[in-house]
Length: 158
Image (tube, rainbow, N blue to C red):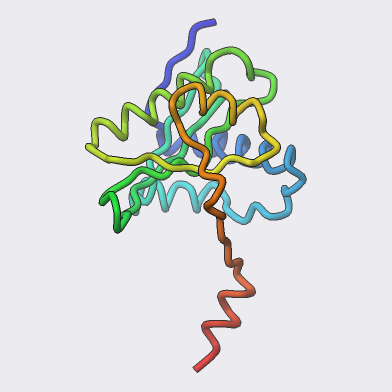
């Protein structure tokens, strides 16, 4: 199978959203996806809030990795990998590894001292893959989310 890993273009965002929704559906969270194609286009291309790499197989987007810069008070500028998604039908083909390699290369090219991401504890294959590449799973660190309702409640307080 021949594929190309490349930077996403604005016109790829429809297929990128399909991938996002496929993953959300797999994790039984499809109703939690609030972004749409226009959000991805605006935030990724008008405001440059993220960079997206895609796995293009014969003109079809079969995988994606979405990253953005963060700032660590310990490490300085870092890259955060928000999602790395490969269509279920294309898993095991090497696309995920190629996207992962592109993310690491991007971080290296930008001189970051850390690339970080979150992996579901149930995703044993991904955990094993990441550990085999030298990544460390930080068991003592917990991911914290505050959703819209909580944000609104705290924002109302004086």
